[in-house]
Amino acid sequence: MILSRASTQVERQSQPQAPGSDVGGKLLAAAIIVLGKLPLWLLGTIGDFLGRLAWYAAPGARKVTLVNLEMCFPDKSPQERLALAKQSIRETTRTALEIAATWSQPADKLLPLITHAENEKILDDALASHKGIVFIVPHFGNWELSNFYMARKCDLLAMYKAVESPALDQLIYRARSQNTEMVTADKRGVVALFKALPKGKATGVLPDQEPTLKSGVWVPFFGVTALTPRLVSKLTNDTGSVAMGFGCQRNPDGKTFHVFYEPVDADFYSDDIEVSAAAMNRCVERIILRDPKQYQWEYKRFKRRPDNQPRPYK
Image (cartoon, rainbow, N blue to C red):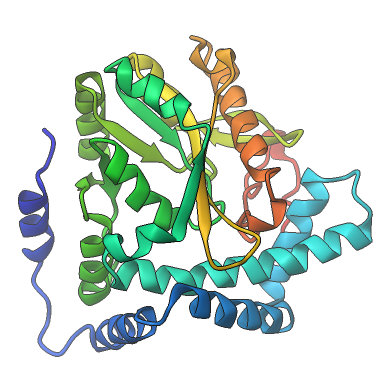
């Protein structure tokens, strides 16, 4: 059953909390709200500065980024990968600061920062077909801002996983549920999506997080065998829906954004899950290659390896 906003909210608030608990979460939520009132361009500038510091202060993130870039771009020189890694960490911290605004300010205030849309005919054709729509949304650019745009264009249903802090959870949930129906990020939520998509609903799915072995399949990602989610392919093909890549990319001015749509290969609609998942990864690759520094390379994408191969993050 698809959960309404009201029923989901009641379920989330029904969990008892010990008196005086969540002090840290309340302070963090308050800090995010205060910080989030700043203009997005200023938050981005602060994030860029902090990213320069993070290159030296966060050796773990630096190492993961360099390993990922070496695996995905072996043809680049070490100097090119080093420069890209520095840019990536700056972009990631910039996005992190910008997210404070997307969690604190209404969508109507932030949407004007999106200057234009590229390839939107892909979405228009999908809407005209009255089929469900599955957006493939990797961690590229400002993915939180992209949610606001999607919700204005489609009848959007999204999965949400509550965070541990009730105060922080309330802040994030309130932001993400603007014009969007939310369901729990569990088996019940997945069932809700399978029921909703044939009725013309749309949803966005992160395709670039490593799944469990049971829910994943080994296919290439930038030429590297990677454990890849089955869910995007199953959601789309089992419901007769239409899939497309989607993202919100920062413009060269550093203050505004544009959204874009990326078509999937015909292979994505294959009954062979490996063929379909590989096509999805190629879509993600094309999105990343729009501006590689705007992708979150700090995530351990290749943590699990096939055939007992050594893990790259030591």
